[in-house]
Image 1: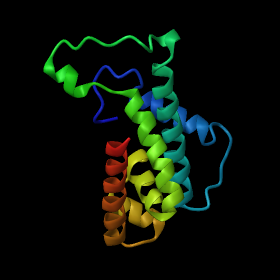
Image 2: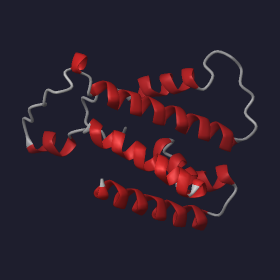
Image 3: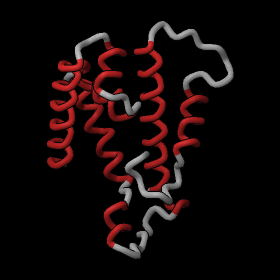
Image 4: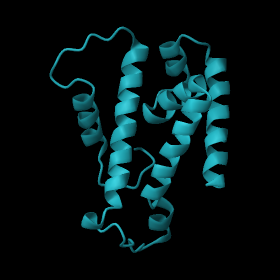
Length: 147
């Protein structure tokens, strides 16, 4: 969310609240490990962002209408929900191709974990996380360009 435009309709606090409700809400959940919690949180965040992107395209929400950019900053910050949907589809292909790499990308991108936090959560070395992160990021970039 830090890289989204300031007037984004999905605010970080609202996103955290939605994630909280999706992964357990008021009921007590006994997490077996940090990894389990982070994976659940990242998955919930991924679903919420995808649902939000899809809802932006619906006619009811002005899906066909284009936002008028008032400055070059607005153009640079424009959030394209179609690109988000394409990213999610590419991510699903990565998951089926290489689940271990997808897991690292999932925690780094959707949960926002650092290399060290991801390494701790997955019980692997930071070097392995960095290598998988770079491969996953490059693979997704290539897939999105192809689409």
